[in-house]
Structure formats: structure tokens, C-alpha cells
Length: 123
Image (cartoon, rainbow, N blue to C red; front, side, top):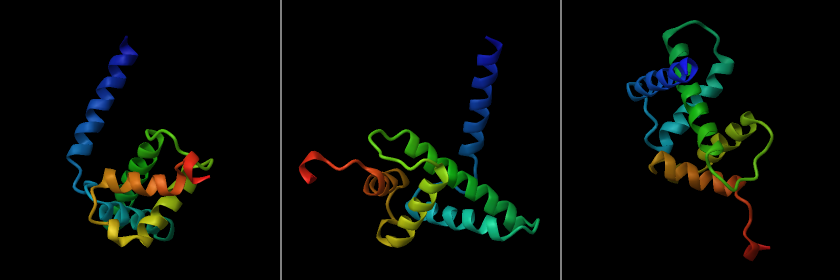
């Protein structure tokens, strides 16, 4: 019982921290910026405010995309979350017309284009 209470308390804290985050993911463009921050994390290792912001934005984007993919049924996914993130970020970069879309709707379109199982009619 104590373990369940601790887990629930941790979830409540993380949700409140997420709600108060300065950079919320509201549009696909926000995901695009997070993807850029994620790739920038690998090349920039200087301890600075910009680097810390890139780490926060990058991990927030990574968590959002991987969580969204895990919660979406009917996908034919590669083996690692890194492969999914790379493919989704490249697809976002290639389709700036989607950048104004809400994050959930745009990401759903992108994920199904990349990993949706083909319908019986398309075979």
C-alpha cells in the first residue's frame, strides 16, 4: 500500500511539474523545436543555460513522442525508441505544413504514415 501511495504521489508531482513547464508541446512546431534540441544535446556539451534548456526540451519531446507511440495501437514499430524518435523528427522536418497542427493530431498523422499497418484494401 505504501508503494502505491508513493507512486501516485510521484505521478501527481510530475503532472504538476509538466503543467508548469515553460515550454509546453502544443503544436507540431513545438515538437520540431524539441527534436532540434534533442540533436543539439549530442553535439553541445558545454554546461550552460542553453544546454540545460536543450536537455529539458529534448527529453520532454523524447518522452512525449515515445509515450504517444506506445499508447497508439496498431503500429508496426522498429525495435528501439531512438529509431522511432529519429524517424518522427525527420518526418516532422520534411513536412512543415503540419507544424501548425495540434501536437496530438499531427503526431498521429505522422506516426500512422510511418508505422501504420497497411489496410487490406491497399494490398
